[in-house]
Length: 116
Image (cartoon, rainbow, N blue to C red; front, side, top):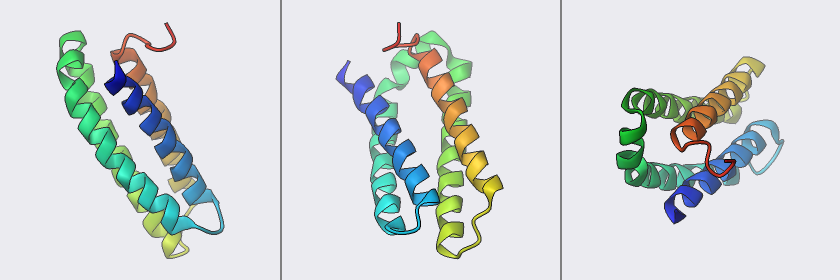
């Protein structure tokens, strides 16, 4: 139960710090570092939750893992573009869309916990 909450809270923190880092005018490096530490927590708790999610829906789990890694790559690309002043609205929207899709799949795998 605590692992699920840690995973969920870290995703919320990553979402906030990513959006702040991509949209704010200052403190981009701070948001970037917080997000990177969040990746480690997300990957660690995701590995611990893998066994339970595998019994629920293995195909959807594989899709979520792939999309989550694509999301991490998109976030890093967004931060790199922000640091070189080449960030586009398309990059920001792709990060937002992937965040929403990964979140929906994650909640689906958890049986919509904690909303149910």
